[in-house]
Structure formats: structure tokens, C-alpha cells
Length: 65
Image (tube, rainbow, N blue to C red; front, side, top):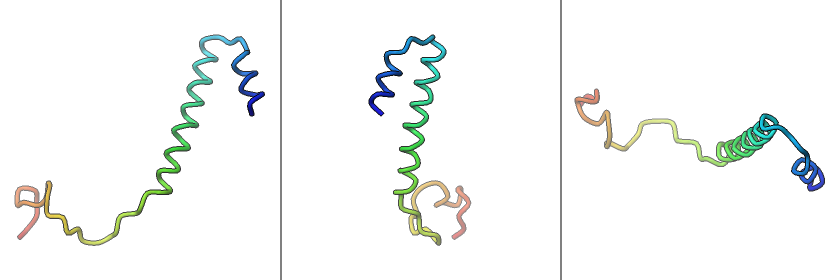
């Protein structure tokens, strides 16, 4: 892995190639972190919410009393 990275850093490349490498690296970085975040997040409970605050808690928001 280190040898491949050294080879990539020492290679001459155009601006387009550089931006492609940086873009793919960012995509891999954020894609993996997003996947890990999705796997570790707790799933919300399905059912009636007990929170009466916020939009929808008044008659204007559509809640019926």
C-alpha cells in the first residue's frame, strides 16, 4: 500500500488526472464514513411520538385535540 502511494505521489500527472485522483479519494473517504455512520446509528422506534413540541403540535400545524 505504501509503495503504491509513493508511486502515485512521485508520478507526473496533468491537472485533470490530479483532480480525478483527489475526487476519487474523497469519494472513498466520505463513502466509507457514511456507511459506518449508517451502520452504527440507532434506529428510531416506530410508533406514536410523545414529543408535543414543534410543528404539528398546535391546531395550526394540523394536530387535532
